[in-house]
Structures are given as C-alpha cells and as structure tokens.
Length: 74
Ligand SMILES: [Zn+2]
Image 1 (cartoon, rainbow, N blue to C red):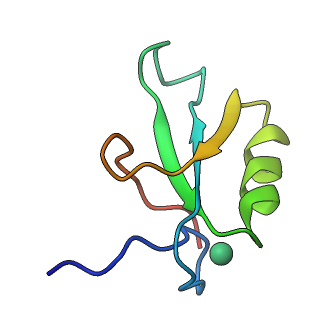
Image 2: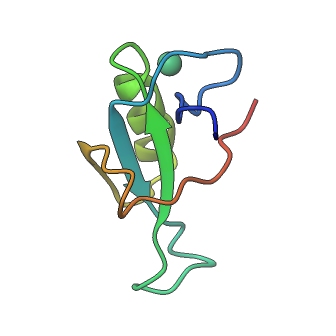
C-alpha cells in the first residue's frame, strides 16, 4: 500500500492536510493548476512562497480523490 501523502515541504514528513493550488502565469495556462500538499505548520510557508512570486495561489483542504500533488522545491 502506498505511503500516506505528506507535506510537500522538504524534510517534512507530516501528513498532508491542505492542498496549495497554484500556477505560474508565465508558463501555465488558466486550466493548468499545480498542487503542493501542506501540513498545518507549512501551509502558510508554501502559500507565501508562491504569493511572493506573484503566482495565483489558493489553499483548500486536501482531498486525495481530486488533488494530484507535484514536488515542491527543496
Ligand atoms: Zn510540513
């Protein structure tokens, strides 16, 4: 069985609670949304990381049925 999804923040093994949905307007089209996962501790960190780059970002409760995560930076 697969390991339970965990926070996308490097070194963090906490279970994912939030999905951080974002895209880079310079390379992604409107319908292309990337998903990072976050624990309670890193939700704000990951959101701010993206917001500080001017990327559209929204945070929602993580739903493993609909959210497919990609790797966050180290
Ligand atoms: Zn975390």
